[in-house]
Length: 326
Ligand code: UT7
Image (cartoon, rainbow, N blue to C red; front, side, top):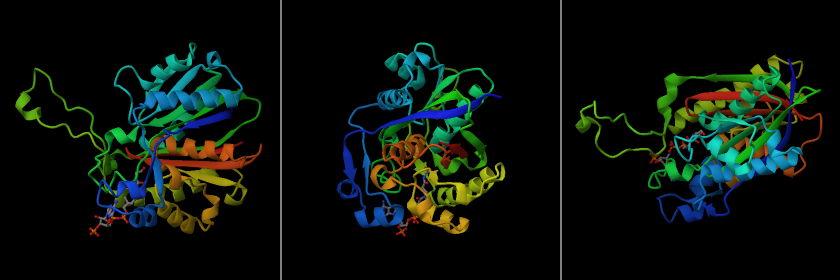
């Protein structure tokens, strides 16, 4: 099996900052409620940029930071719940934008676990020798699938993109992998596509408004998030000789600081071990773990040899985690 390493990261968020205060002008909420219940203070909202646009910007930064050329990329995996279109895939649009002419490209749908799933899949491709260099992107324009009248959801999410370049290496950088799905709980976090409607079905039954906004049972997702972080950390460590003391940072899906508080308490570690930037970006779904990771890289928080643990959970329901040696 070949060894794999993350050799570069990048991220991009739209310029427009929307504060909690500003949201309270369009929906019945307050800065006090949002910040005390979630930790979110502001988020970035697209003023017209679609998912491929943000994804391409993040990808170009990751490629530059990795010191490779776009032509070196053999594989592009783009995780999103908010693609530009059903066809072509957003990964193919990015390929054209960044001129990664030698890449095979496809999207994956794993909601907030998307970035971790993407790194997992790219790792398997590189380990088997099928590709040498892969670009993983998590990108979302969640603002286009939010019901801006629903205070239960619209205050939580933000837009943005993140990317990482993985490459075959002499040293192993992916030390442990954890993944799974539970489709039986899919109803707790949904966003519809289009209904089945064609000339062979009685059209009256399928007519009506298409409801394609995000719906969520916040409490169920909250419990699921805490459970997955605790279980994921334990399972990931089990496959290694390391303990939590050896992990410099846990980089979780950035959904709610109270999920992190509960998980930290159950794991018996300080909340300081978790890297959080949800106060600035909200929940950016598939982009969130990667945006946090790139933020850490930009702040010089990671040195060669550091071990970090990435963990994602979300719609599907899906979950996944990795221990990465930097
Ligand atoms: O990426 C994964 C996806 N999502 C998540 O991870 C989210 C996980 N869940 C959560 O983060 C939390 O469950 C929420 C932040 C969504 C909600 O927090 P909560 O403490 O579970 O609040 P709640 O749903 O029990 O609502 C409490 C009250 C309700 O009012 P009543 O019924 O007690 O009068 C809500 O109507 O807060 C009300 N409420 C709000 N009030 C002001 C709900 N949203 C808002 C809001 N502003 N934005």
